[in-house]
Length: 43
Image (cartoon, rainbow, N blue to C red; front, side, top):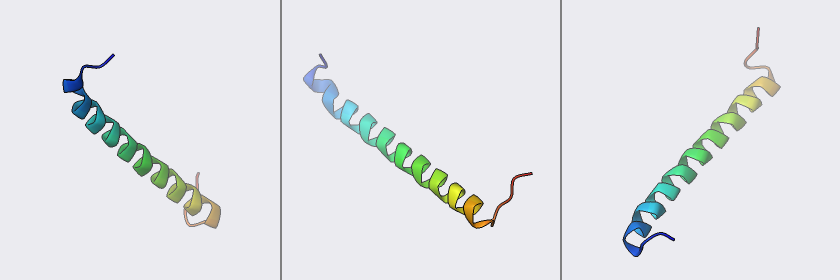
C-alpha cells in the first residue's frame, strides 16, 4: 500500500501517463484518417 507521502507523486505520474496515452491515441487516429482518405500512401 502506498504511503500518504507518495500519493501526490503517483497522482502526477498517472496524469502524465494518461496525457501521453491521449496524445498517442490522437496521433494514431490522425494517421488512420490520412491513410483512409488517401492523403498518405504506404509503399
